[in-house]
Length: 395
DNA sequence: TCTGGGGTCCTAGGACCC
DNA sequence: TCTGGGGTCCTAGGACCC
Image (tube, rainbow, N blue to C red; front, top):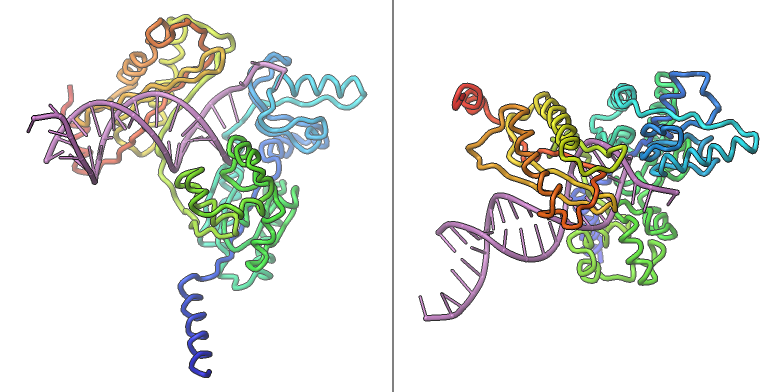
C-alpha cells in the first residue's frame, strides 16, 4: 500500500516535470486602428469612426479595417464593404445621429504604437510573441500563480493606458488557445482568467467558430454534421477528425479538450514579401496593368532590399477577375539565377501575367479587378556567399 | 452589401531522380 | 521487360488570420 502511494507520488512528480504548467497571457488591443486615430485627434472622441480603404463617398471598393465601438452600434464591423458602411452612416444621419468619420489606414502610425506596446509588455515578460500588429502572447509562468499573473497584466494595461491612451483586453490561461479566447470574453478594456482546471469546461459551451482555425467553411461542414458547440466536437475520435481535416484535425482533437502545447514564438522570419492592388475599375488593358505591375514590382523589390534577405527564388503573381475568380501563377528560378534589380523582377512578373489578357489563360476574356506580385523562397547568404553574390557573376 | 491587403499553412498532383 | 517505391521540388488552389 505504502509502495503504491509512493509510486503515485513519483509518477505525479515526474509528469509535473515533464509538462510544466504554463501561465500564458494574450493581450488584444480594443478597436486598435480606430483607437489610435481617436487618440491623435481629440475632436473625434465619442464619434463613430471607421478606418478603411478610401470610401470615395460611398463608391469605394474596399472594406472596413476597424470600426470603433460607436460605429459598431450602426451595424458596421471589420470586413464590411466600405460602401455598405457609408450607406449605414447615411441612414443613421437621417435619424439625427452623428455621421461616421471615415479615415484611411495609416499603418506607420499604428506600427509606432504597436512597437511601444511591445516594449511595455517586454518589461514584464521575457517571452513575448507579437502575433499581429494588435495582439501579443506572453509567458507569465515566472509569476508562479494566476493571481499574481493577473496583477502583472493589470499593471501592463495601466501602463498602456497611460502611455498610449488606449485600452486593451487580456486573457490569461494555461496555453495560447485558452488565453486568446479568454481575451475576447470581456471586451473592451477587460480581463478574463481561465484556470487550468477550468479550461475544458470554459470551452465546452462556446460556438465552434470561437476556436482559432475554424473559419466559415469548416464551421459549415461541422454544422452540417450537427456540431454546433465545442462540446459537440468531442464526439469525434482523433481518427475521424484526421479524416475530415487532415493534419489539422489531430490538433483540433486536442484543442477542444483545452490542450495546446504550441510555444511562444519570439521571432519569426518572413516567408514571402508581396503586394496586391484592386483597380478602381475592372480592366483588360494590358498596357494599364503592366504599368501597375511595374510599380508594384519596384515597391516589392524595395521591401526585399531592406528585408535582410539576399535572394529569392520564386515569383508568384495573382490575378483576380471581375467575378472574383482568382488565379495564381508562379515561377521558380534555377538556383544559379539571381534577380539583381527591379527590372528583372518586372520582366518575370509580366511574363506570368500576360497570358491572362488573352485566351491562353482567360478563355472568356473576363475583366481583371486585381493583380498582385509576391516573392517567395527568400534566401539569406552567409558572408562568403554574399561576396560572391555581389562581386561574382556581375554582368 | 459585390467582397482590401498583408500574410501563413496545408494539400494534391506531376516531374524527376535513384 | 512495361513495372516499384521513396524523396524532393514545383505549381495551383484553398482556408484561415488580423
